[in-house]
Image 1: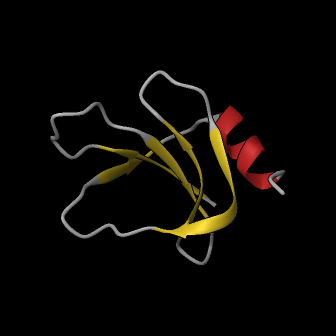
Image 2 (image 1 turned 90 degrees about the vertical axis):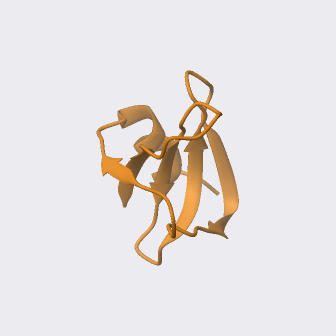
Length: 67
């Protein structure tokens, strides 16, 4: 499981994503927001975007315990 914060320069604030070993997004935290957990992993496309690995314990725990 990787926790990635988007560093792409957009007009909207960046979010933080929990990506599983299959490369699917299983949880998301909007900028300064509450964690959203997905029951099925969503397709996650990194093309044209940049990210950095970060530590977000709450996001990681909720992503691991989803379902």
